[in-house]
Length: 296
Image (cartoon, rainbow, N blue to C red; front, side, top):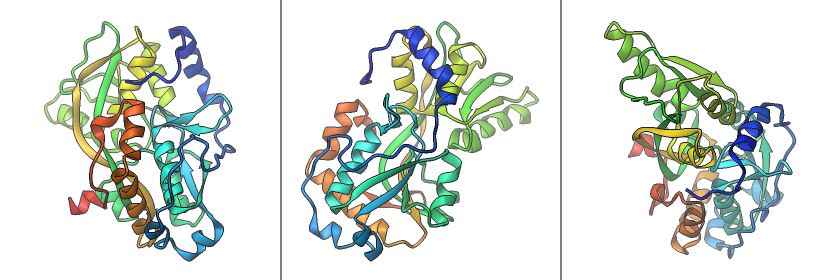
């Protein structure tokens, strides 16, 4: 995994412990903030809704607490490989990317309420969410558990353990509850999901011994283990591979514009270059789809 910053282990743990105090309401990032530049794709840009084309920007809801996918730099600006992909997509569409930092569980309601044009925050595309929004699929990721170094945890035999998760993620709403039900159905103790507002806090709980393990998307867990070298270890292998999707309002023709722009960065090599840079190319895809959970 590519390590963005070489920070001593204790400093990282301290930073994680303090992350809950960071202001998550004000940061925005202009197009090009990631340094990604691409040539405009006229065919993709022609598919933009008139309102967005006239505004010249995409208003994007993001929860930058899920490194390395999306997180904050020292100045509070969203960065990460997903941000770089979206900046490249914005370049293809000829518009700026305007990131609005929000809590994860508020992003989809803010899209349907008209506050954001789209949401970019490692959303797992599933059929339940597709009833509310459409997804433009750009990546696949599995689930990966981690435990404190020296503590053996089996995700398939975790009855009675405390597992840290970010609230309202797939791991919180689906994966850990399903595992817990398997335990209780067999007459064993339930898994206690310990929920946090941010992934940083969930990761920190394991590093500090407040939870037995954490469950998160595979690139996020791999990055956490690499950053907290000596504090965390992988627990089992990744499983339940599923698509990531950019969320847009149901029926919004913006989906087609984003699909075309994402496909354009795949075809010209920009997409692979960004994934390679961040060490997350294993989840890359060749064909950009819409609503893969229902149609795949």
